[in-house]
Length: 116
View 1 (cartoon, rainbow, N blue to C red):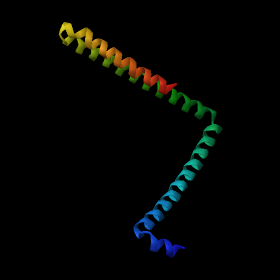
View 2 (view 1 turned 60 degrees about the vertical axis):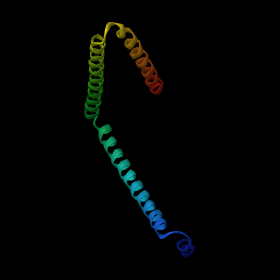
View 3 (view 1 turned 90 degrees about the horizontal axis):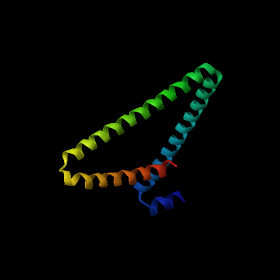
């Protein structure tokens, strides 16, 4: 059977198949090791309520800071957009402003659909 495959297929393909199987085994082993480490870490955290509370608080602060950072970026973007609109000639401000509002509404709608 192996001889038939060698005779009918290219050696390059056979080696490639063999290597991809080996990569799969290595990847599976890495996943198993990761799972064991995660279990060990979870057990250590569960055994120490003070540590668990500290981690929970740190994660909360982290997400709050990320949210504030995003909010700051949104405010800066809004200010830059308003400045850009003010730099345009008066007759273009309304038209460009409406186009921007339409674009943001569409993008925001897409984001909300993905989030929900």
